Image (cartoon, rainbow, N blue to C red; front, side, top):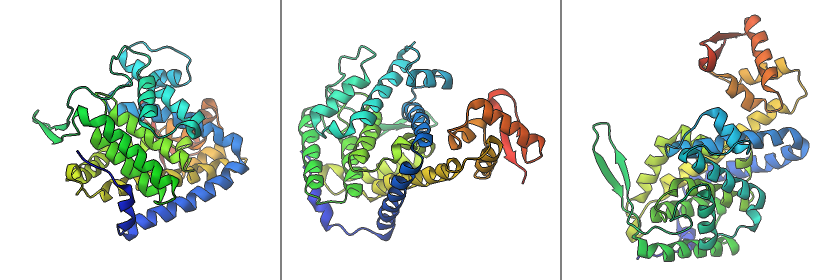
Length: 348
């Protein structure tokens, strides 16, 4: 069986790209703390947006979808699930809420991970909810010509519980002893979790929830305000490519986890930069049209109303729509399309 020794990370030489990511994340995390003290109420609106985006994006990666309106209603708990997809979405929402509210009270153990998995399936009848897999699973790809190829064979079911225990023990040990930089230990833990693939279903979504949990427990709260899942969904080909590169040799401990570490750290740093961009727009008490103008100036190419709303969380939908109309009338923006397909282009 594969064994795990996270102390070995101390012996690895990290290249300048990884060291640059880590330094950048700490720099932005420090600035975020200052921002949160300055404008806590305005930034709380970002939390609502991020929850909706995270729930939508993480499920969409797995092909679990519903309409944007239904997603918002489900996340805000203003409706009940109508079908299987919405049941899975509601379960993800529940786990994300628990992590937001109680991350510091959720230990990194197999039992807690199983409990979170059970909650994720609490709106449906899944006999394997909260239990490790009982059949061998595979990570595969389906190609345009229709053929499927197995990319990676995770651990068999009988080795899974012990492997989960091992990675939790190793992670807690090196973090508790301040032995390993958390920004290195977190992606390694998530990578091992994905290679173990401990559940019959829900492994990808659980890995993203656990990423958020581990980051919060180590003091990196950017996922509260900017959806990491939405960034991953936008660049999911790069995510799967990095995962596949890092899985080679995993069973005998000769894998190169660097591509996956770089992907995760790059995603975190991107999120912090997005947070700073959004803060720069809400920090000033501007009229709605000036705030929307400032947000539009951050955009290159086509953008829609939702893109502007994300950058202006303190504005209502009607305020954003009214400001966009004024900017179009003033010749600063060009509007194209209609209905949900409406988008804007900067003319100045």
